[in-house]
Amino acid sequence: MATAKPDLESWQESTGKAKRGVPEGLWIRCQGCRSTVYRRSVEENLFICPECDHHFIVPGQIRIQQLLDPDSFEEWFADLRPADPLGFVDKMPYAERLKAEAKRTGMSEACVAGRGYMRGRPLVFALTDSNFIMGSMGSVVGEKLTRAVEAATEKKLPLVILSGSGGGARMHEGIYSLMQMAKVSAALGRFHDAGGLYISVLTHPTMGGVAASFASLGDLTLAEPKALIGFAGPRVVQATVNEKLPPGFQTSEFLLKHGFVDRIVHRHDLRSEIARIIDYCGR
Amino acid sequence: MAPRKKPPTPPLSFEKPIFELEARLGELEAQPDPTPATRDAIRNIRVEITRMRREIFMGLDAAETVLVARHPDRPQVLDYIELIFDEFVELHGDRAYRDDRSIKTGFAKLGEEKILFVGQHKGRNLDERTEYNYGMAHPEGYRKALGKMEIAARYGLPIVCFIDTPGAFPGIGAEERGQAYQIALNLREMARLNTPIVVVVIGEGGSGGALGIGIGDHIAVMQFAYYSVISPEGCAGILWKHARHKDKAARALRFTSKDLLEFGVIDEVIPEPLGGAHRDHRAAATVLKGSLVAAIRELKLIPRDQLVDRRYDKFRRMGVFEKTIKEGETV
Image 1 (cartoon, each protein chain N blue to C red):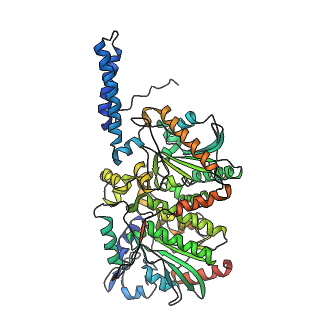
Image 2: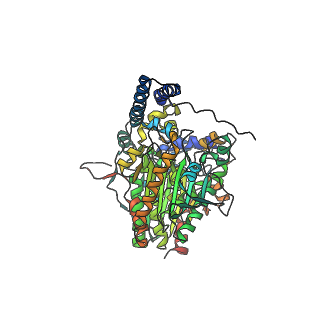
Image 3: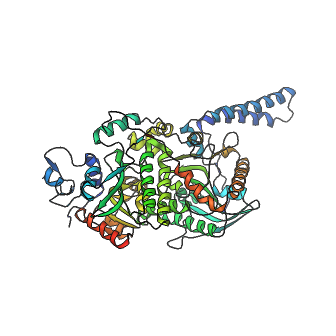
């Protein structure tokens, strides 16, 4: 088992540093155990530190390769592009930020959705990638997920959504982002009514409006070890309650203890665990 | 306990010219034997006050709107319950943990109509604010709201939700008891409650904490209320790295009633009395009541088997994106 004890500080550091997945360079420092590890040995180990089991953030495309059967993923709705309905400008215009993020990550948005196979089982699969504007949900993320849910309903396929969204609802698209929470949740309601199986996989980090919508609505909820999962950010909570946060606050283990996660699953076992649940519940 | 007299609330900075004229009007009206000239002056000042109120309040920017939406004298849920409903039968408790006071739920009579009311109350004085936790609910508040709404749906009562919250409470207990899960569940379940739901943002519409009781068939926002994905302070803290940039964030977020209507995200802006609802509770309540009655009347005309699909389509349409793959694009 893992030895690293994530506290508030190390999470903040890891979310900050992990923006580019595993940082550049041959050698990298693990945020879990602080040891210097060979980058390739981390990548070959599903982005897990070989020393301490720290789960690094996995870029979306690699995650798909890790989880789904080789070449089985057919991406859907890839033509959806974000717009800038508010004309939002903070330190830089949102339109420019989108371009910069696309260039940096090679992705057009924070969500990838489509159909694939997991150990031979067909399913609709979607993920949010915290590399792209903190994996936050704007109109495109909401729309892709909603379409994915609707497609799963129509095709009667199991649905797996893997969340990695430290950003929650995306501020730059204002009220539209908030409404995506309602849109995706309503679609999941229909899927639920139709008897569909939805497995929600929570990865580090899953916060805010993403946690408060589709990520929490799984029939079954799995979480990777020591992921930060919650509604309000730990800094906001600390500033509000003005007391020391309990150890392990808002980690996967904390959620399991309080009854909001079915199983904590090591990344090595994620494929087989999901496949097994589909065997129990899927039709 | 002796009744405490509440000190008058100081005017907001942009209200000062109005207050000065009102003070002048008060002085003139207090004169025992007004001359014709004084009477003329009184009339002129009255006209000027009206003109000034209109001009100032029509020109409020987003940051100023937030000040009005949070004004301590602004009517809140307890005021509106008194002024709008002929009867209110409060229902308590979430059947799991406790009775969260931040969200009030109960049966109410709206004219001829029997409804279920759900509303967030922030508190009008320190005691109330402590009791109601500044309108910031815990998971049990959202659970209570959903439970009562399910009863309403079962017995065919229309639902009216008043939103007025800075946000769901960001505390340790709230996280332990599943704030994210409970809000998510409310979104999913409210979307399929088979009874008309009218939602009004009466003051602050703070993010997920607002949306958690905010799924409905008719969404209205009071003229000087706001409804946002994040508070201006929170947004400024993240994107500008300091809350002192909150006014910039407020303007960037486009969350005033006018913007929201323009975006097609809401159905109605409910006009407030000149100078804002805090200047005339009764007038604000009268207009709000009229709007509720009309909205429910219209929603009741929709066949019950179409209501939930219509609500689904309403939220399904929300979002702005492009659908293009430009030539030579490398992404």
